Length: 214
Image (cartoon, rainbow, N blue to C red; front, side, top):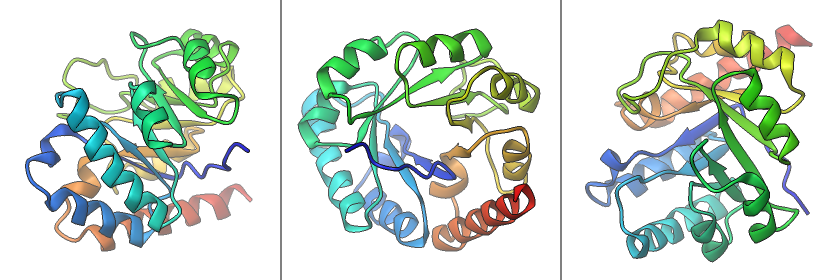
C-alpha cells in the first residue's frame, strides 16, 4: 500500500553535510523534532557509498516512522526499500521508475513550470518538487521561479507539490500561501545551530498556515 505522505516539512540532504558521521546526528535531531518526509540526496558519492549511507538514513527514518525518498537513483531506492524516488528532468523517466519500483512507490518529479508539471502528472508522478523558488547555494545552476511560478503550477495540476530552493523560516509561509503543500528544506535545517528548535518553528508555521486555510 502506498504510504500517506505529509509534505509539509520535507528535509533534503546535500553532499556537503556528509563530510563526517555527524550528519546522522543532525538527521536524527530533525526527525525527532517533526520532519515529515526525508530525501537522501548525495550527488557526488559512488554507488556503494550511496547504498551504505542510504541504509543508515533508512534506519533512522524507520525509527521515527518517516518515509524516505531517494534522489535520482531508483536502484538505490529499491535496494534499501525506500518509500520512493525523486527524479529530475534529466533522470530516469517516471514511467520506467514506476515499472522498477511498483505501483506503491512514491515518485516525485522536479518541475520548473506548468508544462513540466502536467507532463509529470501524465507520467504517474505522485508529487512535484518545484523551484528554485528563491536563489540557493545548494543548487547554483537553477533558475528562480519565485512564488509566482508556484501559483501557476498550483493552477495547472492537481498533484501535491513542494517548493524548493532557498526556503527559510522567513519565507516558508509565503511558499505555502502560493499553493504548495510544503517545502523541501536543506540548509535552513541542517545548517541551523539548533536543529530541533528550527524544525519545531517550521512545524508551528505549517500548523498556522493550515488553520488559515481551514
